[in-house]
Amino acid sequence: MNEQITRRGMMKTCLVAAAAGAVGSVSTAARAAAPDRTANYDAIILGAGTAGLVTAVEAHDQGIKPVVLEKMDLPSGNSIFALGSVNACGTRMQREAGITDTEDALFAAMMDIAAGQADPALTRTYVEHIGKDVDWLQDTIGVKFLELEKLPYPRLSRIHRVDGDTITGGGKMIRWLLAACRKRNIPILYNTKAIELLTDKKMAVIGVRALTEDGLVDFKTCGGVMIATGGFSANREMLCAYMGGPTSRLALRGSPYVTGENVALTKPMFAKLVHMDQFHCGPIVSSTHANPADALNNGYGIIVDLRGHRIIDESNTYVAKARALPSLTPENKAYQLVDSNWADVKKLADKFTDLNSPFFQDDTIEGLAKKAGLPVEGVAASVKGYNDALKNNKLKDLNPPCTYKNPHAMDRAPFYAFPFEGGITATFGGPKINTNAQVVTWEDKPIDGLYAAGNAAGGLFFRDYIGGSQFGACTVFGRIAARHIAQACKTGRKAPDEAKKE
Amino acid sequence: MKQMLSASLLLAAGFAFATSAVAGDYLADRHLQRGVACAQCHGETAPSKAPSMDHCLNCHGGSYEALARTTADKKPNPHYTHVGDKECAVCHKGHQASVLFCNNCHQFKMQVP
Image 1 (tube, chains in turn orange, cyan):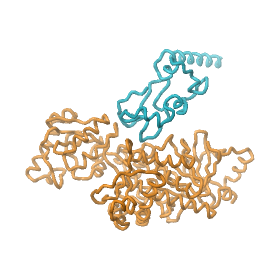
Image 2: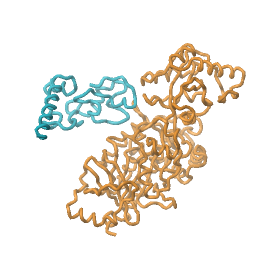
Image 3: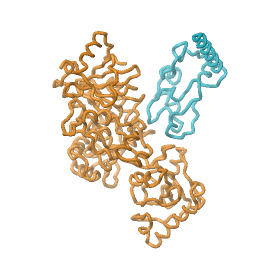
Image 4: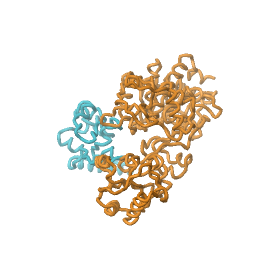
């Protein structure tokens, strides 16, 4: 696998067995058999996503030797599914575009979107670093961004959208980061799944035990272990336990492999798990992964369930509507009905056609319902009810009410029906980190040698986030962790072998 | 006796495999018909696993980037996707119908040779 991995002789195996009391592994799971192979690195990074690869590049550039362990055959986390943007202020791009933005303004906006519940210290750290970090993504990684747009609050001119070319911006970001790792000869070991943290007698983290294609290997580190494994949006059991049944039935908008290693690996260390019920969601068609968010966010049309009844105030954000769907309908499925008063309907229809994602179109509401397999009477009554209420200025009296600020009649053919499900994008909860990206205990003490970043880390996000903050947090806290680990290596944090002798 | 039985079964299986390899229309059959022996791709005379990407690229494109250029007109380009450069055998199956990995999540209409 790697030249730094050595096969132990019989004598060494005996020594390891003798030292087992000193080098214990903290885990509530069944203990895996002690492997007969070890590998040593300055930093061990779990997960080849944006946070992990940023940490690896920065660690290398700080003069230490990192390794990245990825459980899948390629980077397979949420990054590659993301549209790909970075929420930032104080970047070179902003300055060159003549945009005035401040750290205080971005801080206030991030706290506002988080309903004041985000960790203020982490939010402050984010806004203080993100400007230079976006410049670093451009200069050191080679990331290309599209021109800044002017968007409504809170995004304003802060959304640095990655130029994905023909693929997702997130997929492109990962390609750039992988190229940066290749250039530096940073080892990325695929099909290598960390199963538990290794600690010394003082419960400092000195490595991980990982399952490789060739069996178990203990990876040891003098610097630290970075948990960059993402959240737990694809772990139904955790979703059910932390958020309840309906949330666990949301469809997946991102990776099927983001399965809660951030929690499973750190919980035995008594890590402080925070914001565990918090997540982001949106509409999705799970069979084709077409994203109908545009149809849900434009102020036109109504949403009906499979019985043809309106189920929710359509003026809600697509996030709120998707979140509510598994509670409102047993199938977690609904149809967005829109008419041709919405100018962009053809654009969305074309997108669905490109993705071979079913949608329905007809010149009458009755014909549309028939094509979609919905009860004709129910759909016709819902549309008529909406149009009549609009005419009589009674939309707010509907059940459920409709509170569109600027409602439009549904009277212009052709009519369209776009099916969708509620889908989970990402979880926000996880082990709380401090401003050094160190995981902390319930007593708010940093756990020596344990770091987390990206969606694996808890504390920064609550309720919602400004688009592009996930990649931003990966970059900010990945780089901070790498510098802290490098410092720990240089100032003589105990080498694993020394710790073992204690 | 047990060993003899196992050996016979293995032989039978081997025969069936060899027959299908010649008579079928899977990727391996087409390679064989063009004079490419099993070991040329598999690297072993009694193949135990699918050929690696490097073996495929020797004849097909030279590099993944070059290969991607040859399929750039397809929508989406199956060799330049957001999931990264998958091993060839994930989609291109030698001894069964090929599949499109993308369609684990999408529904693209694309023939995979």
